[in-house]
Image 1 (tube, rainbow, N blue to C red):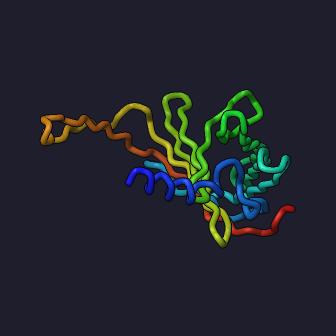
Image 2 (spheres, rainbow, N blue to C red; image 1 turned 135 degrees about the vertical axis):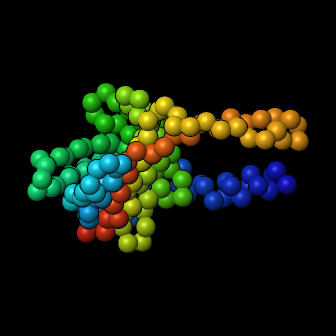
Amino acid sequence: MKLLILLIFTLFTLPIFGQLPKDWTGVYSGKMYILAENFKPDSVDLRITIEEKTLDSLWKFNMYYKSAKYPDVEKDYLIVYSKTKDRFYLDEQNGIIIDVTFLNNTLYEFYEVDNQFYAVTFKKTKEGLNFEIIGSSTNPSSETKSQPDQNNIVYNVFSLKPSFVQSAILKIKQNVE
């Protein structure tokens, strides 16, 4: 049974390790919505351009935020696949490197900055790219305990209350070859 599960997992994951599919490259744009506790909901225009720079190992992510209320912001990132380490990472090109997981046509990042956790996803869809950031304090907002299980083990659960969400459903505007 274990061999069957391993075989199924391997068959479904082989095409995704070591590369982003070609259909990820392109220019995506749309509205990013910003929601936070005790703040009025807001939005900005967002454009993400993804270009393959080195076959199956290096992609440039350009993110451009535009708003009538705030100064424009442009960020250039690199997504790198390290064949020697068999992993993806995001290079912010300023000394910051973040591990990235690529599963189910989605890039996942999870990191901490200044006592704040960030969970980030980029999910490729037929129509475009869904982008989301969820933030939470690293300090638990509550703690609860389970009832003892059949082995008399009690589980402590520390809850981290999300404090903000930024999300965008971006439509593909053009493919980049």
